[in-house]
Image 1 (cartoon, one colour):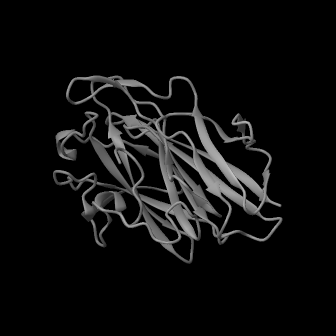
Image 2 (tube, rainbow, N blue to C red; image 1 turned 60 degrees about the vertical axis):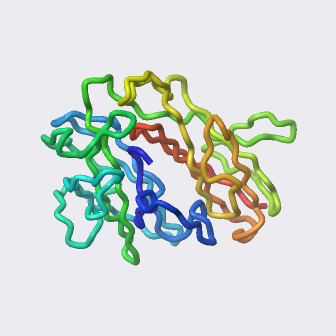
Image 3 (cartoon, rainbow, N blue to C red; image 1 turned 90 degrees about the horizontal axis):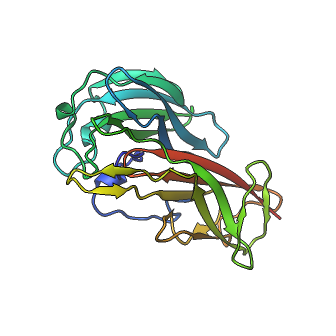
Length: 271
């Protein structure tokens, strides 16, 4: 996962992943679903707003303490595991789920080798707590180079397919009624220009691949991630349902290949 949020257990760094029951896409308790920097790429001395999408379904109020990690990753690592070990040598950055951070005077060479997109990243480590529990999150903030800087993708809509297969946008301001046993085909669209062209480390000019990760407080998803290749996922409201009349939260977390992120939240109302 290049330039993206990495969960507390650092599953992205461990090779094979195991998917427990309930799946990763099911949200319960304290979770961090994504981290976004605006802008997602910065030169030394530049600032950005760093925001964590932290959720506590138990009703707690999460807070975060942010630090920068300067431990260089080993070849093949996205982030050195020492960045999230107890007693790690970290530089404080800020407090809160949304902070203003300044890219320190660090060189590309000090951050390790470039990935296939030609980027190097400063790991920002978030210690997220809500009074009863804690999780860690790591966002890889891209260091600006000579190429035109990356920009975050922009989610234009979150939609469901109706019976005729037509896209119907879910209203961010009004819960969408659903029923137990429903199977909702869900997808996301992006604003024009969200997928940018860039030059890879091998010199080829390519267009970014945009992906969307899905999370929900009920049911199961047929695909936890969608893209242009697999544009829809099906939310089966067949298990882990709240009582009738309750809300079900749905999140879409979009990412590009170079650290860009966007979030969207929608609400379903179980009839």
